[in-house]
Length: 589
Image (cartoon, rainbow, N blue to C red; front, side, top):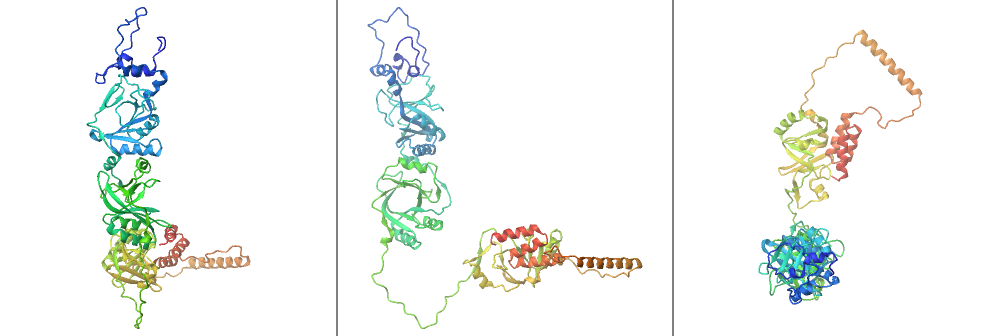
């Protein structure tokens, strides 16, 4: 290089030939700027500057080869843990930037990763995963980079360019050296051991979630349960294919345990979540779903797939199948020992039909009925009414007096039990009694939080309890009660007594004259209206009896006719109650 040209970036990066020859064990210090050589005095020809052959070749390389000192397809990254390293590898696989990686585990669980990828692109992914990116140096011009080989690494800046080191870089080092400005970290091989991908996975766990229906699942089944599982899948109309396999924990070596590898899918629809949960509860069975398109990495059906899982399969060997399991089963690798066989081909049919069943002469009869019980349901349902005894009815009188919405609450009186129904939320605020929910069909109410076992459909409930026309049935743990719907009366009737006797006062002369004037005015108005043609019609002909319509609405509500009750409440202007009933009717309650 001529004396008049300015120093290049690579000269500042690697220093002069004489300074680079220092050992990498020398203490780091600043590279002083070279003093200008005396123009007239040349160095003696018999005393050449001390240079090693490798360093001389390195420093005297032409400008075209200097760009090869920083390898264009080599990137390293330091991560605080295995989870961040796996996220980085998954991102590289998803971006199709690398398919090879070398990992090392050091003190405090840190992970060092080397990949054959463009450093300016991989550095961004490393920072997103929570790591620090580096770019590697080749040991000499024209040398092919080898992942895991000792070399010097220079930290990358956020813009994707290498950070200029402030020390002289060691050459021909026998260990991996990370240079960040003035800081140097040496990765001793005795402390930083090789960590395969299986070792990284062993130190990670998956987040649990509820199993859900999927179009296809796989199952690792012990041989003792394989026949039963195949039979149950075929009975559910699912398609099964299976093959013998060998299962081994990721951290284990040697021979594994023999298992059966199954693929299950539904020809139409999905595999039910209930069957997936039941299958996963069997001892020794692992149910999983594919985390990537190449079907070589699977995740437990009871867990959520990590973000890196769909792309991590690209780092696996072609003959490997890995299953990431929950905490109770762990991660495992499988090796298939044969081709997949349809499960239906393993079902054996009898050689000949069995003897026909002889029908007896006795009359056909149904089996003994199954006892239906009330059990805890656990679902939060709406409170539509409250069942009261005699003491609670007395409390209800005192409690209802303080409520402003007396017209929306109705009572049905019985011998030992009494029923309180409300079109609004009043029933849910009653602090005593047995809360009831209407389950239908019609006027069938059950104690809140309870249900029937075995489950009873609506027609079965109708036949079992059979409320007749105008009746209301209440089912509780203490027994069933029947009320007459026409016995419903407003709640205020529980505290309103007989009115005091009223005495009519005689009319005076002035009162008689006013009554006569009013009678004549009414007669004149009727005659004038008769002479006019009717131009308007009122759909609600005549005066509205609000109390009567409200009573009809309460009876319709008690009988389960929500839409009819909503119409009646709307007619008398109680729009809030009408809106609530319309909404409940739309939900199909």
